[in-house]
Amino acid sequence: MKIHSLSMIVTTGKKFLALLLIVGSLSAVSAKDGDHPNIVLVMADDQGWGQVGYNGHPTLKTPNLDAMAAAGIRFDRFYAGGSVCSPTRATILTGRTHTRTGVTTHGDNLCLQERTLPQALQKAGYATAHFGKWHLNGVHGPGVPVLADDPNHPGLYGFDEWLTSTNFFDLNPLLSREGDFEEFKGDSSDILVAEALEFIQRQKEAATPFLAVVWYGSPHGPMHALEQDRVESEDEELGHHLGEIVAIDRSVGALRRGLRDLEIEKDTLVWYCSDNGGLRIDPDACGTLRGNKGDFFEGGIRVPAILEWPGQIEAAIVDAPATTMDIFPTLVELLDLPGDSLLPLHDGESILPLLKGEELPRTHTIPFSFRGRTALIDGEFKLVNNSRKGPEAWQLFNLEKDPSEKRDLSEKLPVRFRKMRKEADRVNASVEASAAGKDYAESQVIQPPRGEYWYEMKAYQPHFEEFFQRREFKKYENRVPPALR
Ligand SMILES: [Ca+2]
Image 1 (cartoon, rainbow, N blue to C red):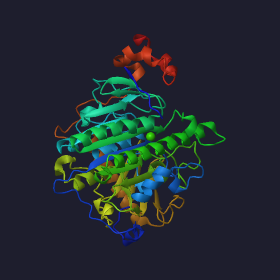
Image 2: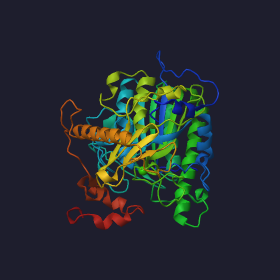
Image 3: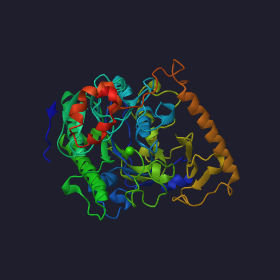
Image 4: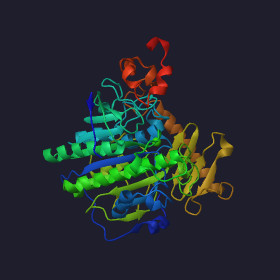
């Protein structure tokens, strides 16, 4: 084992066009004619919509995210494809709503029959790498290094290189470099960006375009910020939680600076977002939005998102809805990838027009489903069933007039309500067919769903002794079944 030390909106209406505030003139966003811009996807774990300086958080300062937002496109209605971790990760890799992909909830394994973004980029000659939280291999429990022979490791979904944990991690993380365990010292966000920049520098030297995916383990619990990062708060845990975002922000600054130092910032598109809404520990986590992580109200799914590509994309604030499901289809169009890169049935759409400052004529609603709950976004309208209580729980909101979702319009707008209810039934039936494997050539799902706690897995038994000496794993020692002791 190596030890490291680190020093340190359906836009069919004209209304939404009016909300698209373009600053400065537009350049023609294009990557045709043999151009291969680099792609960096960065994602926080549980950062709420309100937890950025530019959305007015009262105590948290995020100067680097604010600068990135001012220099790029700041999405003000960007939706994580799921209201919790793994689901959103699945939507990014597939462009599909997660319930189609085998990932129903936290920790489910992504179906190996899906077509993924890194696979498509590999075929286009890109070097691909994943850094950080994976959480798509069906292993539950706090993050541990992904095993070399894990049947759902990142390499099997198109990543040439990976430095990964099964789930969340914290200060001084233990990560897996393609199966080899490596221990690091310092804040995990700093570490992931330093590692990503090392990969990026190698690709620059080799003149190879790259996809770098950086999925932080912060500000998810356990909450331990470096002393220097802690935010002053009467609630000590909240101070640590916000301090983890301070570290994220610093690492975003390091990433932006690193690309500039390598003089490749104009060849590199960086897309930042969070994986779900904010936590209750911070009363300001979701600003004035209703709900938190796990909900289909805005607070659970609307997240900070910024896209920066100097020289190609002008600074703008985009108020049209967009989602993590759009990332893959957008890159397919931008990079002129083959049409079959994506499975034919996908829920995201290319938002390239928004990047060019144009109107986006979305062809269908943005669907969400999770544990019997459903939401559909259709421009300014949102249909939501957040309670699992059946038909009586459906509500309709106008997000433009009522962003805090206080006034249910289902009785006031019965025609729209019925139309969207019908659409929700259609989407849910389609999702059920996908989950049964109907979108795959085999017409069925081949790998049985996983869902095991690592401390109950024989494959991890040889590492128990090492793991249980560590602070973050100690309390799980007594959960090991007798057969594995
Ligand atoms: Ca999360």
